[in-house]
Length: 77
Image 1 (cartoon, helix red, strand yellow):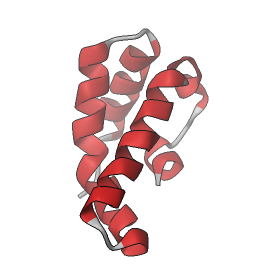
Image 2 (cartoon, rainbow, N blue to C red):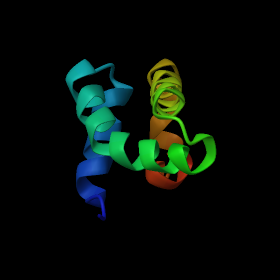
Image 3 (cartoon, rainbow, N blue to C red):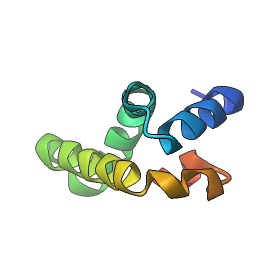
């Protein structure tokens, strides 16, 4: 499923400002795709979930740099 570019850009901008609700929306938007991608490598549900959580925590900690990422979906994968 293709993620709407305008929605993603808007969420990136909001997350950059520290908006936790936008971060939660971003998390939900990417969770399944990141989880499934991780499962291709680790083959364990718990490990895949942990990978996704680690990725999203790094996004939150580096949120000030989100606007410099032109394709967030590719970046996360």
